[in-house]
Image 1 (cartoon, rainbow, N blue to C red):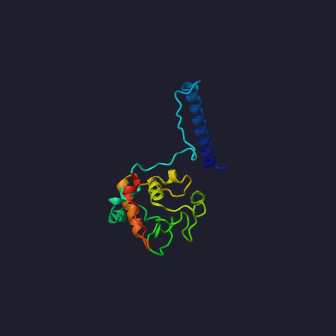
Image 2 (cartoon, rainbow, N blue to C red; image 1 turned 120 degrees about the vertical axis):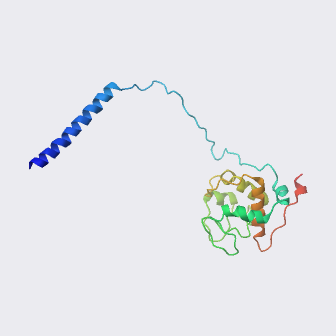
Image 3 (cartoon, one colour; image 1 turned 180 degrees about the vertical axis):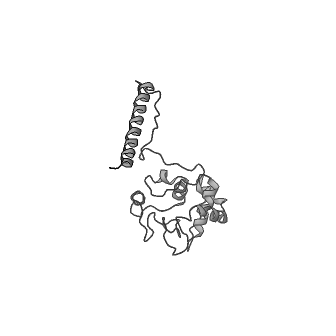
Length: 185
C-alpha cells in the first residue's frame, strides 16, 4: 500500500470515529424518555362499505330534468370524456361507451370488463340504468355502488348532474321518455 491509500483509509476511519463519538455524546446529552402515555390519539372511524348508506339526491331527478339543458350537459360531460365516449359504436376507454345508456342494463356494454362490484350490483343484467340510478350514481359513485372501479368523486350540484343526464339521454337511437315531474309528489 502506498502512503496515499493509507492516508485515505486513515481519514475515513478518523471521520467515522468522530461521527460516532458525536452521536454517542449527543444521545447522552439530549436523550428524551418515551412518554408513558401518548399526548393524544387520533381516531378516525371508517364505516364499512356494507354499513355506509348510499347518498341520496335531495331533489327527485324528474323535477331536475324538467329544467335541464342538454347543451349544458355536453359541457359537463367533458369531466367524463377522459374515460368515456358517447358516440354510437364508439370505443371503450377506461370506462364503457355510454351511447344508449338510459334504461340499458347495468354492466352490459359489449366488450367492456366491469368490476365485480358493478356486475354484482347489476344482478345479471336485471337492473337498469334508470333515471334514479343514474342520478344517485353520478352524485356519489363509490357510495351508490361500493367497490366500483370508477374513481370519480361525483357531481354534487343538482343542476350539473341533471344537465349531464339530459345530455346522455339524447345520445341514443330512440331516447326513452322523460319522467313526469308531477308523478314525484
